Length: 97
Image 1 (cartoon, rainbow, N blue to C red):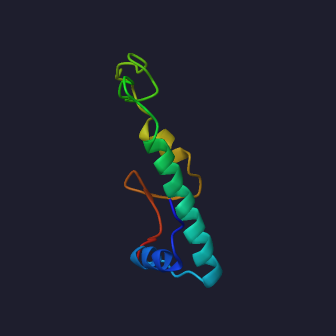
Image 2 (cartoon, rainbow, N blue to C red):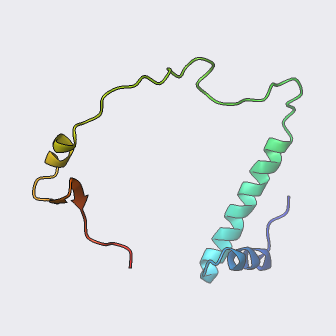
């Protein structure tokens, strides 16, 4: 695969809403080229006869859910000394304007 051009990198950066400096554009083009070359190498691997892979845990690795008691509200609220606790809940400052 040929290297991405500076124009390619500029267009991709624009689509991704990235503001890159000239040196960053060169680095971005090289990095994207490297990623695309690696994807091409993966596509070239012969996977004939290899079954699809659905996860790393294997069958039966997860346990069944078991109901259990949870932490009492007073104990949970007691873990926040000095916190403003109103009506059995934590009161925190607003962080989203």
